[in-house]
Image 1: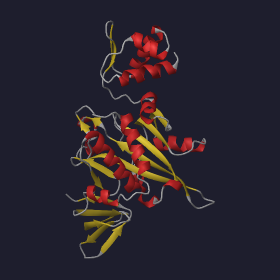
Image 2 (image 1 turned 180 degrees about the vertical axis):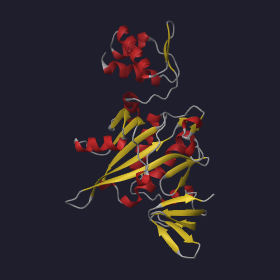
Image 3 (image 1 turned 120 degrees about the horizontal axis):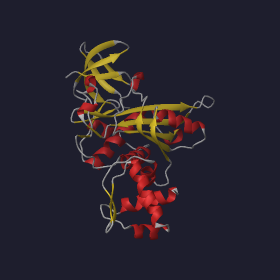
Image 4 (image 1 turned 120 degrees about the vertical axis):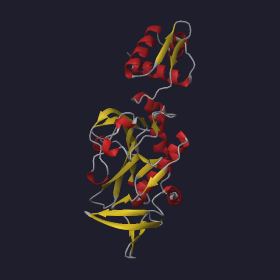
Length: 315
């Protein structure tokens, strides 16, 4: 089966937006036989698309969130986006593509990850129904590499709010919450040019828990992790969300975003525990400076601007 026909069938069904499309119309628009259309539909069904067939009306694509190379291409257009049904991590795939000569910017997207990583070497829980992606950005396009994670948090929060209508909150520095539960994790890595001493490229890893049920979450994470759509049908597909996040992340570089971050950072004004190198100190987070440092005041009256380390809320 010719992949161009399959892609064309999917495009026409998606563009119909809930209306039937006759096999005759598809074959005429694509310049192929009715048999080729039928085979393409069967292949799309095997990929997981929910397509209803009627002898009188034709084909109808039900609203479904199928993540595939075809849906990514339609969402991203000419922007290079690579799809992996399953991978150890999108970070690993991004580094392979860089090594093979793929120029940045580009995006890698996976339906499932078997070895996702979080901050400080932790494993990253990657449940089904999530969006796991990396955006690789040229170093020359990042004026403030030290603020990249904060920029990403703003871009992702605004994307989710725009496409889903859900209100987000950010836990400094790299977690996004909805209704008191973590739904997004962010991890950034830089690739440094050892000879020139500059940043060649940066990879922003993003994990989004889009839809799922509470029983999918391990018991030890259930009290602090959730889904954007828990027990509900997503109003946006993962492919569209990935393309929108990527566009916003590239566009926000060089912009003034610290105020937008402050508005969403729910740590400010809260009592926290500052965890660092096995030690724990109580503090009050009273602000965020223009460099993205969390300003805290410890119980003994001393103050510090945190640029790294883990902060956990004391509820």
